[in-house]
Image (cartoon, rainbow, N blue to C red; front, side, top):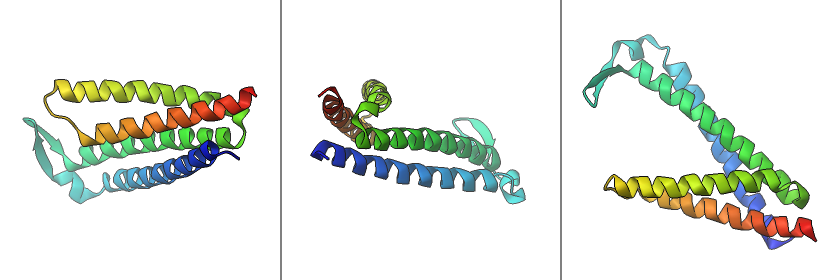
Length: 141
């Protein structure tokens, strides 16, 4: 197993752990959104009154969806690191993620505030693309 494969496996394990944390957080938010105390409280969000219950429901759904996507990507990357001829799907998703990350950086600059998370996301995604490309070269040999 090459260094790129080992590094990709570590990154994918971290992605899977992160996905599980997102799924747990989303589940807790979804469960908490039905509590009667949450339904009676509200807050002002950019001039719109929103209940805590609706916000918890929206964030819970978002966390669960993002968690499932990250879990899928982590599993694909782990599988591709183990068998280089199966890296294609992960490589494709990593390229899409890199393009979206670049768009996110441009968007945050255009909004007038540069988000540090966008830069971290870009570096992480670029690392995934580079490692997947290296592993993909092994499949060709």
